[in-house]
Image (tube, rainbow, N blue to C red):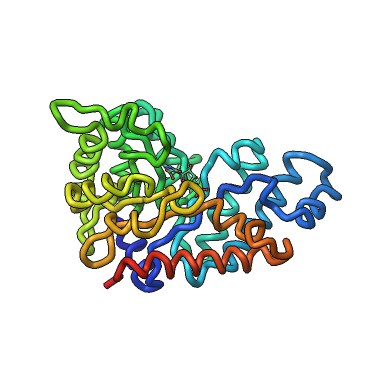
Length: 307
Ligand SMILES: O=C(O)c1cc(=O)[nH]c(=O)n1[C@@H]1O[C@H](COP(=O)(O)O)[C@@H](O)[C@H]1O
């Protein structure tokens, strides 16, 4: 009922990072694409199977040094039901390898529909007498802008199934300030949303002082990271925007508390495409991903002392 499992892994590995698995087909080495296209042609099925193999090899290469993955659902949905199957297989495979899985779905709706999203991604679905686990991730990114009734079903499942959510608070994109920085009674919208995260998590605080309700705060906004860390003492941060979007270790350091905890930093493209940037043989893509993951860990821990 909190992020204790994730924080324990971060402490054990001394690594506050999550690898984003947002696999466009263009990132998948051509020899892997060919293997599946020789069988199923240039189809969504072949693409999805190639992507699973790509994910699997990256997971194998990083699972002993990186605590978590974050597959973004859109990159699977774009391959239809085959892609959805790859998302499900990726989640199961990463969990089998001991990793914590954050599904990035940015879901939200009215309460009744949110119950369905909750069952899909974090909970279970009853089929007759059979309690089935559809995707079985450990955490989900969500949007809080519909208010409490869109979040309450998630809170129940977080408590019952030991799961977590990350609510969008201050997103990493350039135009995030158009709405999120607007003031209401002198307080920015992102800070109000942050306060709502603290309130939603109040009943579910774990051994490290963080609740099951986290916040997404972009690496591209170091000042707000620092401000929100001080304002939201029980809210774990998911920090995307490191690497490909220009965020750096010095900037994200303010997201962490005095024990070097309280945040996990995401990198997707910079890790998946490390072999293209390095210009190494494409057969080495998984090892290049590992090298970049190690470089990122060293970069972050040169600023953050994890206790
Ligand atoms: O919720 C997210 O993960 C997210 C929030 C945000 O504010 N910015 C952001 O980039 N993301 C996601 O984080 C990942 C960033 O990918 P890279 O820029 O390739 O590292 C993508 O999956 C985005 O969808």
